[in-house]
Amino acid sequence: MARVIVGDQLLPAKVVYVGGAIQVWVVDDIYRLFIGDKSLNVTEPEASELAFDIENLDPQALEQKWLAIAKEFLSSL
Image 1 (cartoon, rainbow, N blue to C red):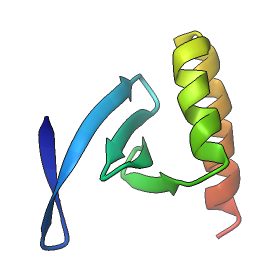
Image 2 (image 1 turned 90 degrees about the vertical axis):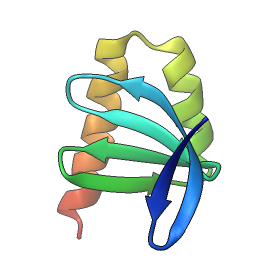
Image 3 (image 1 turned 60 degrees about the vertical axis):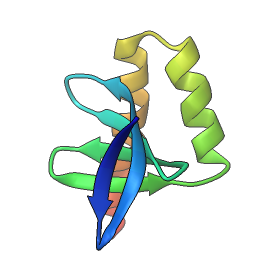
């Protein structure tokens, strides 16, 4: 299993999706959604929804949905 450094910790990481607009990694059992240079932690109940979508949606639908969710969240900051 891959590992990443977060702060001063070495944590287990699994890349579960790589697309044109988004990437999804699971780092230390937390889903992380990468959009460009931004990284968002995805917590429950959205984490379960994201896991389901990765398994069941085609890549285009997955990216459209989660890119829209991420952009909406980022615009609210």
